[in-house]
Length: 319
View 1 (cartoon, rainbow, N blue to C red):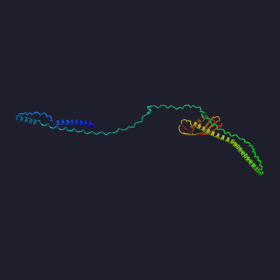
View 2: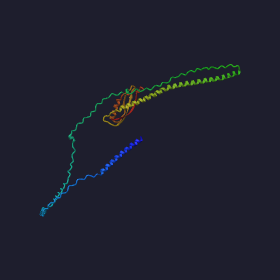
View 3: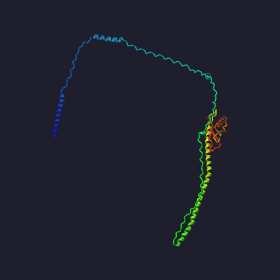
View 4: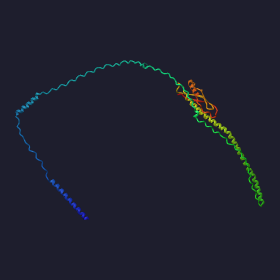
């Protein structure tokens, strides 16, 4: 196998050497061949002309010189003289015209004044007083304090403790000892019973006293609760009075703050009447405040069910 491969490789090398040598021989032959010669230029032709006679040459030269002398050179044209510039005319002096004051225009003559209509205030329609009592929930009644029931002192029933019977013993000495011990234990048991009775009696006395004090404190607590309810009611009623008086309108008066005091009387069923107790010192303002106080709406009834009168200071912002 290796010999066949070497033989094929040698054949290929020989073919390549032959092709290379053929190319080299062709290149050498091409370089040795001479190039084609260019065609030769045509031969030059010489013409012999006869010279002109000398007389004609002299006449021609004289004519050319005479023509040159006959034509004079044109004289240069004179440059035009510049026209003189006109002198500027003097400007006349500016005199400002006199300023004449203008009279103010009479606008009244242009538009006649329109008659101003007299202001007629609209009639005041009295509004029905609002019923605030229906809006507010009824005041919660203070819970009544019920005194605890008295406990009757229990009767102590003295229980008799069973006495231990001495056991009969054959000997006399132990019998004597048991008797002595029994005699000692009896006064001790009696003392214990007395102490128990005293303790129970003191407890029953304390319970009776506490029931009496609870019964005494119940009306005081109820009165304290009623006072608190009365103060809360008066505070709410005063706020409604201030709100009602803040709606006061004074004709021809706007702006400012006034202070006054109103006396309010509320009956047991809630019927309310009010009047101005202390005014501002201005007749128009005091009259408006008095009218507003007279239209005081119905207030909630006092919680204690009795008529109540109080004074409420008010501060009003006029608008």
